[in-house]
Length: 271
Image (cartoon, rainbow, N blue to C red; front, side):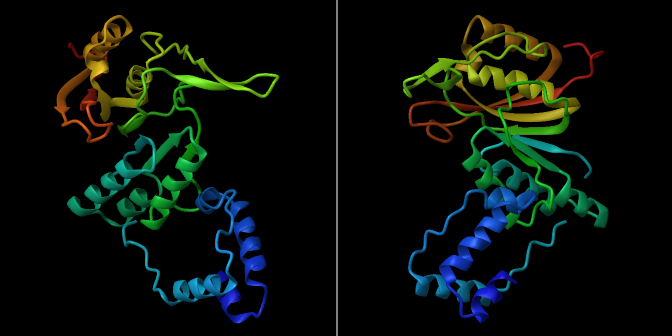
């Protein structure tokens, strides 16, 4: 173990710890994502050594949870994925192969923020979900059709009406520029992030797939592109439940959140 090397050898603990972090950060899979660009924030060698001793005293036993189907979240810190894992493991009697599939092959996700992806991967790792290959990616989910399709999509898209990117000019000054997603699978072109995510979720679903997506009120009532998207969604999917939540549950106080529950219909079914 790494901790044994630090515990048993009389070495420069800080230097050795820094080298360990660098090595882990260059690794493949989940650990490489978790430790990417990690730094030692404990400057006192005595405190660092004491922390290593405390860690070494713990008994690190992962959850014994090793339903075919893939669940996608876009993705944040992975709370929806953890809740789904917890629900499946507690409510279904899984055989050995199903436990293995749940642990290694069920959950996938993306987030555009590198630090958020690291937190998500760490969350999954601490709950003994996943293996050497990392299934959570740093990417802009909306940029293109990923071609992958899923049995279930759970997502709470970032709140904010317009999509934008940061542009740095020749003088080094940063500014915001509107970002428009032009995709053939989208019903309408809009700057509204939530409406774009709603279209993206429909694309991700397999036929008979299910989705739960958190959206603000503007997705339910906005005209123009919003109305077009809602009509198309109702035509191609069974939007069977709208759960209205009190203010402050997902967004800032005063902003109402809703959860849309959607089933993707076969093309032959009538609305």
